[in-house]
Length: 451
Image 1 (tube, helix red, strand yellow):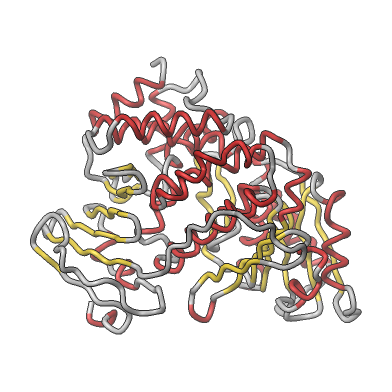
Image 2: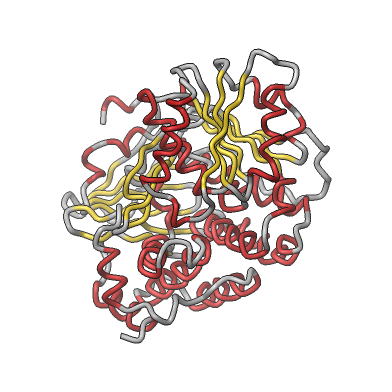
């Protein structure tokens, strides 16, 4: 632990809870290197996120560690309309790999935003057959306007989660090699989460790593999947089992692209927005309860604020734990159950956010069953998901065995122990742990399944 002393200060105690005197993170750099220690990679630890404070408890040593980030909490109301073409910028602080997230209306009309992050002369835009007719020409223009030295190729993939596989990924490599792209090229992901994940993974692997840019066009991608460098594809036995951590040069979020997003896709993205409030930002959750109807009605100011606050939450967590050694796993509330739904019913039949919404309800039920949260939180979660037109239960054909078989190969399993993200305490607090009553998990599964 001595090697981390320059980055933060901490105290260890022999109690089950951290000492009240535990000092707060004092550095401006928010790198929490302690989560890379093998001590915390053990399946016998628990991470508890209480607002902006992180407690790490190890069952073997009976010790706990508490670290608090001192980044400013921003909770402004959306009272002024953002100027067209002027971005709000959220920084993802990863040292030499840091990058900006540009958020705003009309940003695809500002070529300088993209061009400053293109390092070479060749660009490959990866998109799908739904997005290409809408935005491919606009993006190509933004990449080349006033800069004739840049040439743009594209590859158009089929649209849908069911195509997030190795066969489809090879089409990106085929186009890149056919176009004789070199290590100075830049890949651009134009689309939702599937395109972002696949393009990022292709960029990580092609010539052992080339630059790439994210241009997310769905709420889901704008608030979650485009931020933080998680890339990959699905395997028939589990979602996102093949991939890499690989950061983009920038993320450009033009909120105008949401104007063409179908209502179902819009609602799906709000599942991830709701998640941020539940696990770490109670004020943001309360704001959502008051403004969900504005979000569903696509109020531009409400959408811009929800995207901004979500990106701030994710950027802060990624800065602390880039490669999901512990803290970042808390962003996956409901995902273990949700991924089991997606895998079991077939990729694409339920949207990711729909599966996560049902998964969050199951995680909340288990949290309540363990006595970790009170009934009011359960009711509020149901209410806000219903406002967002999201499911509050898994598909009727899901069985307990279907859940268990997929959850057994979840990425959060360590040494055969399934660790879950659950709520604990007041709103905005959660825990990532393998220390819970397995009988309670079985009871939750049987509650939501016929067998």
